[in-house]
Image (tube, rainbow over all chains, first blue to last red; front, side, top):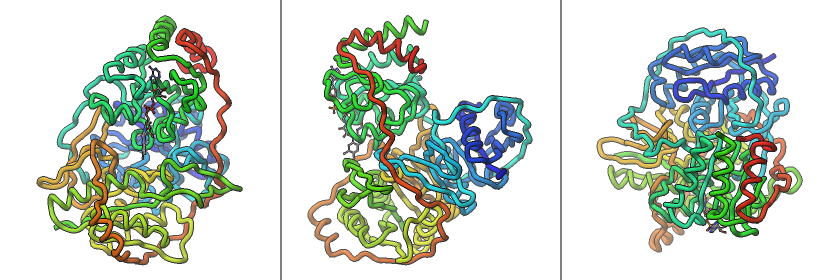
Length: 308
Length: 247
Ligand SMILES: Cc1cc2nc3c(=O)[nH]c(=O)nc-3n(C[C@H](O)[C@H](O)[C@H](O)COP(=O)(O)OP(=O)(O)OC[C@H]3O[C@@H](n4cnc5c(N)ncnc54)[C@H](O)[C@@H]3O)c2cc1C
């Protein structure tokens, strides 16, 4: 069996759940994976043991304190064995995987949503078509979350490699998000509002539901462009963020092609819109034809009583 | 003064309907544009020049039909327009594309390269970091702001917020929308662009190891359930728990 290298996804100093999905992707590719954990504290690699993985390498280095693409790629490349490189299709991991691939003179296939032998499928044209490519040799591959089943955890067989990398960027200042709320790019559930919300103040109704569900709040471009209080960091779509949550709730959003580009691959989509003909309904698993003023209070109280 | 290069790509308009015929998309009827994020890269490159002087060269990889996006970049305000191509190329994979672009950037003597965070066709976002790696340069991706007082400082998303990062040495910087307003071509720019010459250069590219097997329409989603009236939200909440199992 050929080898593969999984670059573990980390979040807030621990291994992110999507890493277990990468193990299933590696196995679907017919490879035997080694998990590589970029870290400053090797103990987090103890959380990166899975059925089907015989080896976990903690790549420990000061360069991993902040994200710096070139030193990360150099340190990961030096510590990782050869083979197909597999990473999560998050903005940062796509970036570092592209550099590791380039360092090794390999090609990269991003945003994979299906694997059949050496054939990989990804969305193209913002999801308006799918493309299947075949690999003839090693490459790097990034895999979208919520596509492959999570491999079961087991004890990790960790070896620690100390690695240094020349950091090429210097963080001057970290600006924490104003709200404590999750970013749409990090959330498993997202509730987004569009121009139909009427005013930025009305986003508080979305926030209440987000609090019940532990969700992030997103927005359409029309909302971001119209209201200064809705920052671009909330925008989902072609010129905003591409998200792939388990559940996406679109409220007062018409479903323009550029909005769909950022969220159409969500596992479940709920739409609340007063216009029964809004295009968003053709993509919704559950559509509610109503004003948000009518629907959201009902939704909030139903969810609250279910979650408590 | 900096020699600034901005990478641009010709892509179908994001409003275009994408039709699949046989096992390939048929793009014969679409309108072609500069990839939207590349417009933010052009804007950032022009702001860099306004701060530090130098020249801005727009670089693309593609056959002659890509000249149009170079002329569009010229109309917005870049100084030079360059296209790298080799008649023997077709369906290049990312390794080949990045190698050829890195070679062209080296030949142009660039100090800094700007590009869009992803191209609107592939959505991959591999080109900026991949070219940087081949050049041995720094890279910062998905920036939402840049300033040029005393070196390049960019704002980039990090977990929990964003960070202001200063870039040490040569770099490839990929640009997101941020709060940037992009300038549009003016009449003078459009006139100059008409007369502008595209400088066509050649490069080597390794053989591709990733080949396209097929392209297809997205899988059709089974029709969803649609309810009338706000009170149906209660039923939808129940289905999210009991049928979809997502909450
Ligand atoms: C190059 C380009 C890039 C773009 N990128 C993006 C992007 O990244 N993200 C994005 O979202 N858009 C993007 N757009 C814009 C996109 O085309 C749409 O204009 C935008 O998505 C519309 O936002 P909306 O649905 O909130 O507003 P609208 O289209 O105005 O829809 C508002 C909806 O709210 C409904 N509504 C009104 N009142 C109520 C009520 N009380 N209760 C319930 N429903 C109500 C209406 O029926 C309507 O369907 C882009 C466009 C271009 C050209």
